Length: 127
Image (cartoon, rainbow, N blue to C red; front, top):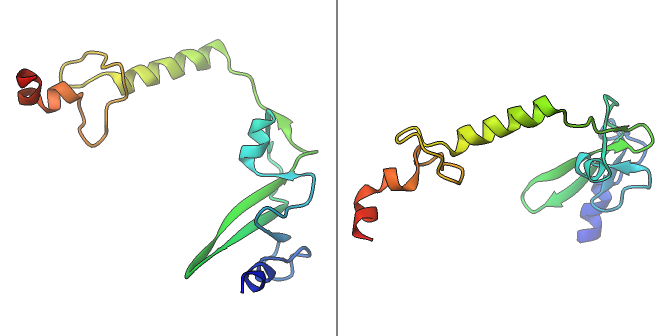
């Protein structure tokens, strides 16, 4: 049964899905996902999707991972000092409590909307 599911995902010519399709973990050499490219310090660089991986799932749509050619990938752009500064300010904004305007030292939970001491003041006094 499992081999039949993988057979549905194998289309190296792209006749059924429009682009070459391979079962999960059976992609040919020279193709990589975005995460795999990033781990090598590369990015797709505007190239089109070269192929896709399909992972069949029981009673659901299959998982899809798009593949890019490694030889056409470009190096990741380096972070500039301005980008580092903007990232630091964004992270500071995520750690700052809007209620007491202090740096909580952690990212404020979106479910609370404020730091834990401001969200539960009676529990903080008891402790």
